Length: 317
Image (cartoon, rainbow, N blue to C red; front, side, top):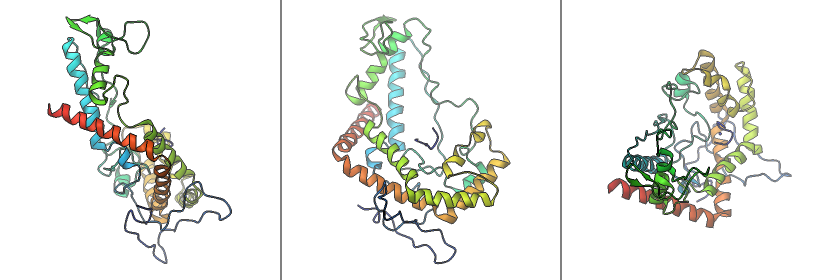
């Protein structure tokens, strides 16, 4: 998700909480009046430690975690069923567990780890740690078996990724684009369809995250956060740098250093209302994107709805 691991109106989306006059989280710094902000004004900024339960304007144009699981899971079952017709065994991908603090309205945790409770125990690792050998993409069939590549893709061996099919494998005729095409057509209505979110929705999701990270108001609270972290002896320019420190991926479980960083991170986020400001700016950026791309996003929403409906039909059939 962009730099995070590679990563109505703004006032109406939630009850607004006023920061305490003394000792409370810092308010959103105002953008320089002489320099137009990359993101529109955001209105009053909520005080948040976590925005995982808060809606964003692009949410309704993207698959939710439950919808993604349904669509991708249905595709995988269709591939397995088709492969079985050709005497092949299709291995399903591993499911990747989501943290108990994970958002329910969207797939990605846009602002990094936001649960002080979980960060104190798991640092920047997923809840439960990294599972040995975990790889959600280690799926498919053994393509060294005779006819396997043709059955799954319809390819004629000319080097193209997909082919017109027509081959006979274990007494069965391969469909156009093989089992992959058969599954794609069942869910999208077209061999050349796109499974998952529309490209415009994905692009805007990433672009608004980038804009919200780079916005002067967000950078200002990132600077406060960075100074706060230095008080605990940790030198990171922003929360994204702490989240993506390569040290964390080297062990299946967090070490004591990681836990100290994560605990300080959570405290500094809370002290300076980092998530509240970041979310408010992100919300405004997404509102702007929805206004500017209304027609394309309407088509994206229809495509998502059609996939979900198709997956539900297959699942109930």
